[in-house]
Every structure is written in structure tokens, then in C-alpha cells.
Image (cartoon, rainbow over all chains, first blue to last red; front, side, top):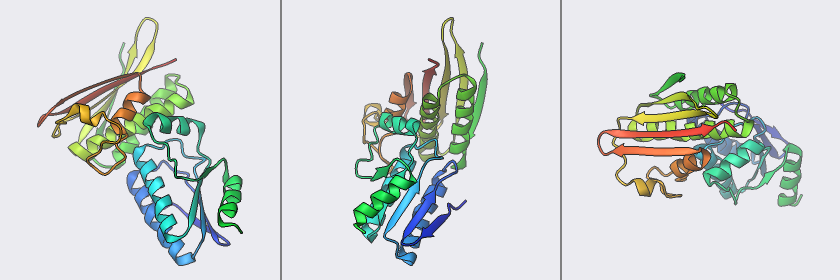
Length: 118
Length: 133
């Protein structure tokens, strides 16, 4: 299964709407990086509104994809993390401190625009 | 009274299967959304450990009913290599697989009861319980 990555002007938008298994998460990581490369996008929003579980593996993949995109010169913002997911992540001891987040897609786009100072 | 169900862990996708079954059970038992997420996440960590370190095993669900409380018992068992140093794997940030090392200490925090029995060369059994509040 592949997660669709949509292009909107110089941004990429991703909405994860499936229960992520490990392989899909890793495929997504690769797909996103190559899409950033091909499209020359400067910002990415990954919306997690429909994701009801993030375990340590998925958290690592998401955290890594933020750092990897950063290396390539694209900013990533994670949006829409559910209250139950946030509570579970903290219980797990995963704080994702270096990962930019926003309440929803709209706030995410505003945050990207500020970070990229457009 | 005990109701049992079991998911075999043989392939990566079984991790998702196990956590979906656990979440469904938790929902039926009346757990709130946050506890459902805690339970599903704990199962995901346990099932992934089986898949990563022992190749195969099983996750068993039992409904524990006491006079005044009800809980979901989750038993993750495998016949894998076992864990040489139990105190080490319970430390936050310790990992032999390049992961975050959040798995087992995380599961302990997510659940109400946690017990681990491991024998080198003969396998590991982890028992956890979450009580309905």
C-alpha cells in the first residue's frame, strides 16, 4: 500500500488515513523524500488526524523523515495528532521535541509559511 | 469467567492484526478512547518484539473478571533466544535493533500490570493487564 502525496504550489500534503504497518511507513519515507527531490518542494505537511495509534516504530519513522527532509532543505510539519495519541506517546517516553507540529492542516500551513518566511 | 483469543505473530502484518484485535476487544469491554490507544500501542510494541527478536510467537488476550473489576490481560509469548539482561531492556533508550528503546519500559507505563519471564535459549513471556476504569 502506498500513501498518496499531493503537491500544492511549492508544498507537499500528506494525509495518513490507514493503520500504518512497518513496511508502509518505510515505503512512505522513501516516497516522500523522492517526491521532495523531484518536485523541489520547500515544505511538507503530514496530517495525522485519522491516525489512532503511533507506536515507537512509527514515531521513529516520522521523526526520521522530518530530519531527512530537513537535510534536503524541506521543512516538515506534523499536524492533527489526536489527544489519545499524544498521551500514549508521552507514556512511551517519546517526546518528539525536534519535530514541528501544529493543531491542524490550516495551522500547519501557517507554520510552514512562517518557517520559510514567505 | 475467562474469554480467550489469540493472534499468531509470523509476519510483519500480524503486528497490525494483533493491535486491531486488541483495540476491538478493549472497545467492547468499555475502555475509553485513551486506554484503547494505550492498549493497542502496548500490543504493537510487544508483537513487534516477537517479530524482531524471536521471529514468531503469539499474543493471547484474556478477559479477567474479578468481583469488583474487569481487565484485559495480554500475554506475549515466544520461543525465541530469550533476553540475557532483563534489567537492561527495561531501561529507557536501550535498544539492540536501532529503535528508540522505548518498547518495554513504555509498555510497562502504558499498562497497569507488567511481568516478564525470560530464559536464554527457551523464550520470553510477557504478561500485562489493563483494568477498566
